[in-house]
Length: 71
Image 1 (spheres, rainbow, N blue to C red):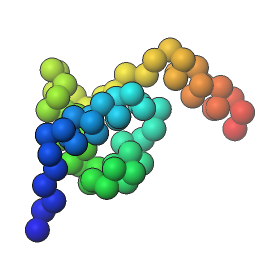
Image 2: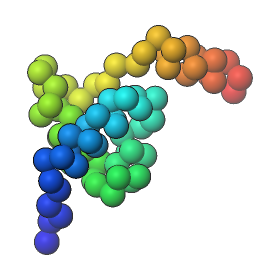
Image 3: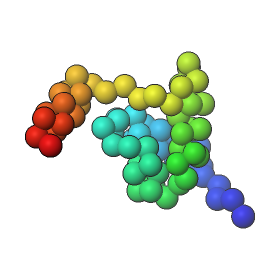
Image 4: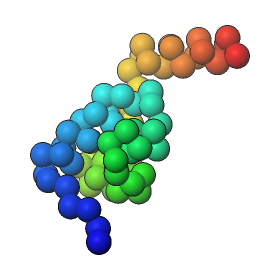
């Protein structure tokens, strides 16, 4: 039987995923106990352009760039 999630939980999951765009959706889904495709769908439904692409802040992008340089 499929799990049911409250609208509040869904919104909190979407907000968490958007704020933590430096983390993969897969790892966020595991943390929240939902399927990757479920979380992806929730984000797409909440996004006006229908995309699940999350925007990085300039600071988050800089951290990713620096981490790549170190590796």
